[in-house]
Image 1 (cartoon, helix red, strand yellow):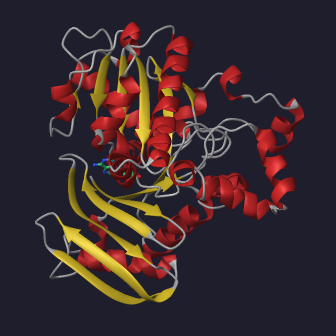
Image 2: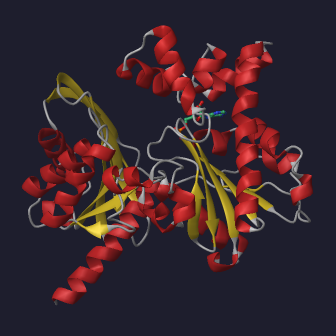
Length: 404
Ligand code: AMP
């Protein structure tokens, strides 16, 4: 099935057009600066043909019109008729407690995504805009929503309830949700394929280390705990986000510095993490470079980043009564042997033996432990778009089979 995968943000839409049977990406691209008169569309076709142009793209409707037009275009396109877009799969950040899997988009689903806007005000409205634009532009094409939170919805209550008055959970749904679920699901499943062991028999710790970072304890195929919480701010140290801190610090800083809620929100989300500690950059490549140049704060940022991940490996091994595999993914996890090595140093007691040669080798997908290591450590490039496309194809095929 040919599926258009859309990731709609506030001012950008990323897309991939995927043939799910062959898993080929027929075309990919993005529209940036939506809302401006000089928005930019960049598009790459499977054969390498590339096009980039600027246009007035004032909203998501127009942006998606452009995406469909470029897919249809004689010179740069990959289809001859709109009907060749057999389904659309959307990334939706927050599915609240309603969605523990991907679903066909109906009016009822749209209403539920709207209800969850309060939980993800920076993401869900834009995801929804993408869905509504497709409904208008491709009214006969089925659409599927794939939620970042869904994979974590089977977490047990003791892992998702905070130590707050229980009424706050009932009243405002304040609980741990977790994010990056599509990525954790994909890499844990892929790890079981690579290891040749059914996922139902594996206890896997997945570490998605990109600009945003999170880990999950995936026990026999189910996410039983994850580091991100009510929002993506909790847990690991990230590019610009603090991750775990003592909540009393927030009140203390607000008093000391006279910060407003918006200012403290920006401080925790945009000025903390690697950037906040190093004072140099939120980008791990620059942190490592500065560290090599002898910058002590870059070294500190690197150490704090790795230490916290190691700490959660310990915690999640305890949660699952052991660990069989650890997976590193996303920008840092996939590309930084230094980070992987530092995290795994001292974990020999758990049964982890890193093979330096494998850790430093150029393969994208690999096992980086020695053959006799009891716990296997893997590097697996994440592929959220593929998961969205495959979920979409599966759900739409079922619906079509039932309507025949
Ligand atoms: P993502 O959000 O998955 O695109 O990941 C972005 C993060 O990956 C940034 O912190 C980059 O610095 C980091 N990254 C990308 N390539 C490398 C690399 N070769 N070494 C270290 N970090 C990298």
